[in-house]
Picture 1: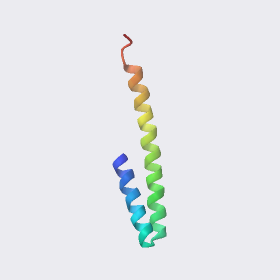
Picture 2 (picture 1 turned 90 degrees about the vertical axis):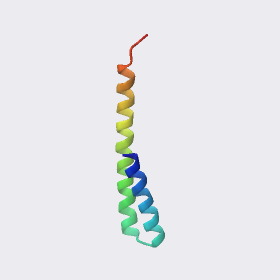
Picture 3 (picture 1 turned 45 degrees about the vertical axis):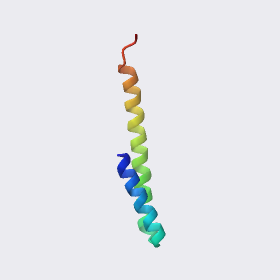
Length: 56
Protein backbone atom coordinates (compact mmCIF):
# COMPACT_ATOMS: atom_id res chain seq x y z
CA UNK A 1 0.00 0.00 0.00
CA UNK A 2 2.80 2.37 0.86
CA UNK A 3 4.54 1.54 -2.41
CA UNK A 4 1.45 2.62 -4.36
CA UNK A 5 1.40 5.86 -2.39
CA UNK A 6 5.01 6.61 -3.31
CA UNK A 7 4.31 5.68 -6.95
CA UNK A 8 1.40 8.10 -7.23
CA UNK A 9 3.40 10.79 -5.45
CA UNK A 10 6.22 10.44 -7.97
CA UNK A 11 3.71 10.53 -10.83
CA UNK A 12 2.22 13.71 -9.37
CA UNK A 13 5.62 15.36 -9.05
CA UNK A 14 6.66 14.48 -12.59
CA UNK A 15 3.31 15.63 -13.99
CA UNK A 16 3.60 18.90 -12.07
CA UNK A 17 7.09 19.51 -13.42
CA UNK A 18 5.87 18.90 -16.95
CA UNK A 19 2.89 21.23 -16.51
CA UNK A 20 0.08 18.69 -16.45
CA UNK A 21 -1.78 20.23 -13.53
CA UNK A 22 -4.92 18.10 -13.82
CA UNK A 23 -3.02 14.82 -13.80
CA UNK A 24 -0.77 16.07 -11.00
CA UNK A 25 -3.74 17.06 -8.85
CA UNK A 26 -5.48 13.72 -9.37
CA UNK A 27 -2.33 11.70 -8.67
CA UNK A 28 -1.63 13.72 -5.53
CA UNK A 29 -5.21 13.20 -4.33
CA UNK A 30 -4.92 9.44 -4.88
CA UNK A 31 -1.59 9.41 -3.04
CA UNK A 32 -3.16 11.21 -0.08
CA UNK A 33 -6.09 8.79 0.08
CA UNK A 34 -3.79 5.76 -0.12
CA UNK A 35 -1.56 7.18 2.60
CA UNK A 36 -4.52 7.70 4.94
CA UNK A 37 -5.73 4.14 4.27
CA UNK A 38 -2.20 2.83 4.92
CA UNK A 39 -1.96 4.82 8.15
CA UNK A 40 -5.33 3.56 9.43
CA UNK A 41 -4.48 -0.06 8.60
CA UNK A 42 -1.07 0.30 10.23
CA UNK A 43 -2.58 1.66 13.44
CA UNK A 44 -5.23 -1.08 13.53
CA UNK A 45 -2.61 -3.78 13.08
CA UNK A 46 -0.43 -2.14 15.73
CA UNK A 47 -3.25 -2.07 18.28
CA UNK A 48 -4.39 -5.63 17.56
CA UNK A 49 -0.79 -6.86 17.73
CA UNK A 50 -0.32 -5.30 21.15
CA UNK A 51 -3.59 -6.78 22.37
CA UNK A 52 -2.69 -10.33 21.22
CA UNK A 53 0.65 -10.24 22.98
CA UNK A 54 0.83 -12.45 26.10
CA UNK A 55 1.10 -10.53 29.35
CA UNK A 56 4.18 -11.90 31.16
